[in-house]
Amino acid sequence: MNKQPPHYIHYMYSYPHKTAYRPFNLPVSLSPYINKVKGRRASLYFHIPFCRYKCGFCNLFSLQSCNTSKIDAYLDTMYRQACQLSPLTEKLTFDAFAIGGGTPLLLSVAQLDKLFEIAALFGVSAGEVSTSIETSPDYTDRHVLRFLKEKDVERLSIGVQSFLTEELLSIKRSTPVSVIETALDTIRQMDFPQFNIDLIYGIEGQTEESFLSSIQRALQYQPTELFLYPLYIRSGVRIAGKVNNELLFKMYTAGRNELQKAGFKQTSMRRFVQDSNATGPEHSCGDELMISCGCGARSYIGELHYATSYAVGQPQIKSIIDAYIETTDFTTITNGYLLSEEEKQRRYLIKNLMYYRGIEKADYWRRFGEPVPPVTFKPLIDKDLVEDKEGFIRLTAEGMAYSDDIGQLFISPNVRKQMDDYLLE
Image 1 (tube, rainbow, N blue to C red):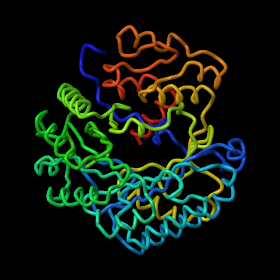
Image 2: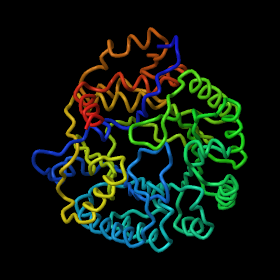
Image 3: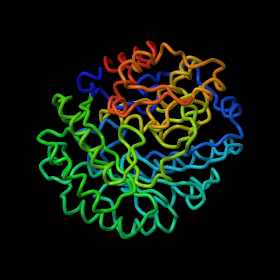
């Protein structure tokens, strides 16, 4: 594998992927699963699946709509959902809150304020827990940002993708560069404690030099964090083409080196942080708890992972959102995945290996009562993509470049089949 560029297939984030989720034979009650994890820390996530337009590369669960009445009905449903879930989760301690999408800042200040009221039902206040929200250059208004500052939002993340007009048009983003620059200037003046910029490499017509120029322009706005995403052409998106693995690999390497030279620390294949204190929790991941409100959002409660049905096409997404708005019972789950003990082990290995800290072998033993199977990583160690030392199994610098490709190796046959079957449906 280390003799050629990696295969850029798709991102390895969580496990299993939502395309592996299926309807349960019978509805599943949340109460027993939440009771098993009471007393633990959890994160709260709100999903806002609305955008002014769909970017050409986007396969996220979002609807191209700014319909105010539809959004109001959606927020009313989130409130009903939170009213049912919050009594069940009162024994959890929420220490993080994120609002994603879609484009959350498409909402008015009054609608955003309602989101914070909904969070309060879970005992969550932005000033007391780490709080993050996503935006786009088109909806980065000074008035809205001032409201977020008053709410003590800690982190703002903005999807810029490129600073070159021709590259933006190639991925079907019509936002003028001047609007991007104004948005970034405004964010910088607001001085959020954490400020992230997303960039993409592998855009048609993009070169290593043009990608580096976008990184350098991003750095002028003094972000505390940058995400560098390879462009993956996935099923159902609005752009087509073939990925040039060799070019993507060169761009990744150049971007990584540029950010490391600028003092950023790499914590995953995509994430670079300026402040070493903001690298995130230094504990294992893979069994984290997340309670979500909103359509399309995933929740993780022990072995129970669930979400509404996954879709990319606009008619299907609209239908799923409409069904969500009509839902009356949020305490029983109809669609998701129940992880076996083996799947929990796979999730633990994938999630920790993708993070720079790696897999702590002693922690794995404590959790699963057995050592990490040595044969699992030997081929990767032999290729210098993984190292095993000082009690940790972690990716080497070269292995980090192959992160998404390596993650594919740990997907179980059952999850792989479910994912493949979804693509064939």
